Structures are given as structure tokens and as C-alpha cells.
Image 1 (spheres, rainbow, N blue to C red):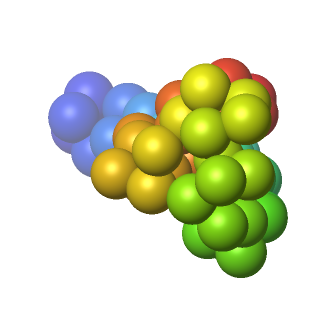
Image 2 (cartoon, rainbow, N blue to C red):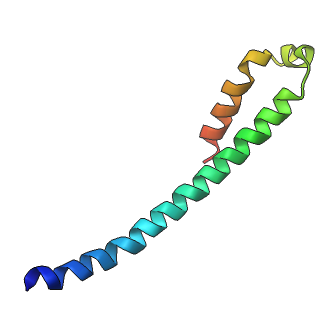
Image 3 (tube, rainbow, N blue to C red):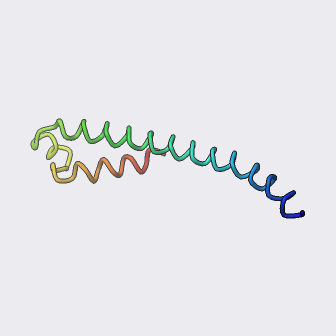
Amino acid sequence: MAFMSETPRAAGGSIPVWFSAMAEAIRIQRVRRKAYRRTFNELNAMSEKELADIGLSSLMVRDIAMQAAEMAV
């Protein structure tokens, strides 16, 4: 009987926590994806000369975009 009375409280308390954690994870993922796309698109649109002027190469664009996404949140 004790198991039955404790189970609903444990489940009831964990579902809102789980839902909040999932919603926050989705929000963070969206922010990071947006930062990645924005950075990637801006750098990818530059010519090799423009990238060289700021000390980058086209091979670095994805890595820079990933770094920007990590720092977004």
C-alpha cells in the first residue's frame, strides 16, 4: 500500500521537472542552431581574400561557426 501512495507523488513531481528540462534544452538548441547558421552563412559568403583579411580561411568556417554556437548560451 505504501508503494501505491508514494508512486503518484513521485511521478507527479518528476513530469513537470522533466518537461521544463526538455523545453529548456529545446530553447538552447534553437539559440545555438541560429548562431551557427548566422555565423556560417556570413563567413561562407566572404571571399578567400576577405577571410584572409580577418585571419581566417574557408577551411575554418565550420569550426568558427561551431564555436559561435557553443558561446551563444
